[in-house]
Image (cartoon, rainbow, N blue to C red; front, side, top):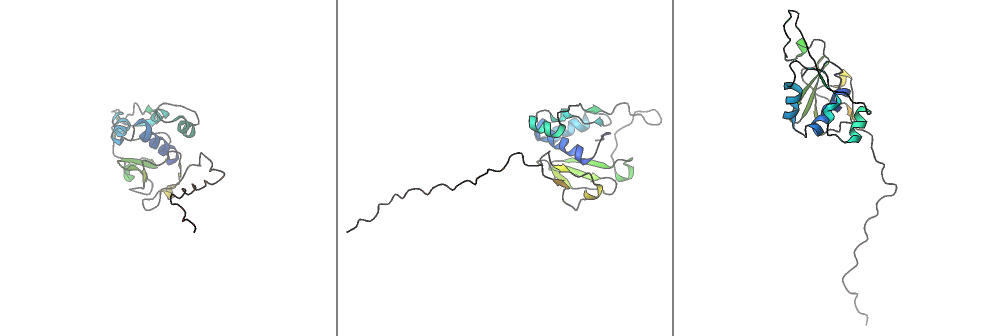
Length: 177
């Protein structure tokens, strides 16, 4: 899928992970049909409508309360005046694109199109609030996912939990003589 506006991992991955986990209920095929098959060429932007069904706290964390719709990339015309057709994006014909995202059953492959043909795969169950790096050099297929976990939303308990008391013995003490 082609997305014209803001294709950096820090912006795309939280939205795509949230969409998979909530709007599409873990159905990568339904997500692919929507993102790829429902538009002729691509998207001008992916919007917060992809987060429909997400919990309010996740929406707030990902969008800051701002909502905007997805918009198809309409009226794409070739130099000869014919409508542009979707094409396979490769490093040889990326047309200035920096990032590629491939939806797999097990996660999203993130490809740094400036330097790589393949990329690491971000598991679908990754927390969408993770902070993903936009550094091209850090997204290599032989490296770990360049992300940090989101901050904790709850504080640890102030006092440690005490172990349960041992159950009372059911044996009778020996009689004294």
